[in-house]
Length: 613
Image 1 (cartoon, rainbow, N blue to C red):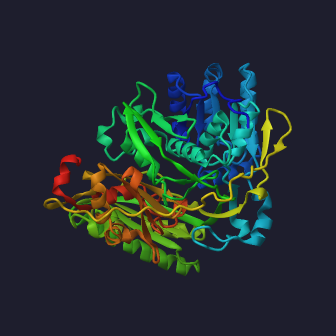
Image 2: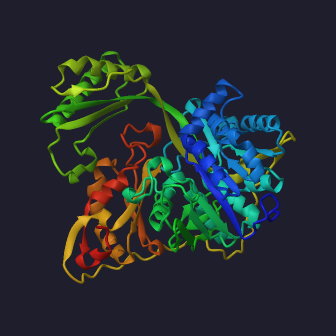
Image 3: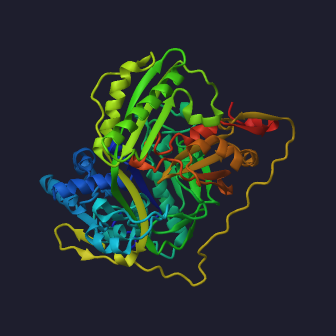
């Protein structure tokens, strides 16, 4: 591994800009980061299981398609000359299901611009050519232990690659690196490994670099987007600065944003982004290292500058996580509004009638029953379950949706809905427009496979591709492979009267989806408040907040994160299957943090001087 061979001569710090969490924000952030002139590397993260399935379908229809064209048209091509002038490296998993085709288009654009930039393509993650062999092994789903889906219904099958191929491409002088399915954290970690000469045995360094990539993968969410204290973020939503991490050789890093941009970088914004997607804090598994975040420390060292240090690394997984999608029928849904007295009851009455008529309709046509139905009355506090504040709502939005094995079954539902609109209770209305159409459900599944069975390859420019081997970590025999969870906070001791208040007064929180599970991070605003928060967010309390979302047998788990004065919470079976399989209004669990922040807990009155007013 050639230390610093492919990146600018800045051995003490590497500055990486996180351009996008999805395709829509790439154009503005690229321009913003280049104009600031503060970065050595730009990383672009486009991938989800669903987006990979869409790109795989596009490639089947056109061998030259299957990658993210917005990366080319909006993010890269308008800024090629500036990228070359500033000698900025670009690392993007925009190749999707066809990194070779994406790289070919980039090379053509580079040639037309008269620039001397080396373009690399990393491939081999696509395991669809091995589908028949894999189907015979029929691995069970990693999380649910469900059986392997029918092979003829599988739409994508990709290994989540790590940093090693990115390091190899940089070692060979690549300026623009296009990958297929590569973990978001690995894009940043690969740049840091090559720049500082980190080896696979440098586990603590790798953990810090991987967490830097994890934070960048949230885009502007690390700079004030989706922040609990949203009203304290400078500027409007459109002006938020893109995130920059300044990585040091010891794996610590400083989080910041371009000067003069809107937004906010604080221990709260960075902490939320860091913990919002971590389930078990002693074993956050990345492709290249397992991270223990329980001893992490966040320190505000200047305006919009937060330092993170204390990451601890454990040996990496010996197998790649394989993410797949498969066709699991069709879904359809509609939003309607009711207003007037008893609006919620009217909406529920109408929904029940529509589902009853639709069930009769599929039975009459000798079709299978609906696989799932979903009714949510938004505005009536249906998301709050037993903790709803009021039973009176005079204006609500009814969301009603179904899933069926066949598209024709979903249309039976739509016909029933349309037929009953004139018979509905008074107050039904909605903005006129096109009726929804059946949408294919792409359910996700995952399993593990040995890294040696994934045939990685690297192509630089027009040279023939060469095979890559995942380096075997040369670790001492006594390397720790597991970490005991830290002790939970001690029971709080009241110094005075206690008072009930919303959790938001004393905590930040953020949530996101991990398949059909929600990962929720809760951070105390001040360290002395954490024992009260831990004591208040009991299993019983959390069950009351989230139990109405959870399927039978689902579990809630809590984990302390003492270094950040925080805790993480996982809620399994809470998203109706997750992703585009879910019929929920919030299929990614993004609002779960808002539910727990609104729920009351007890707090020592003497600690309220440090609570949010």
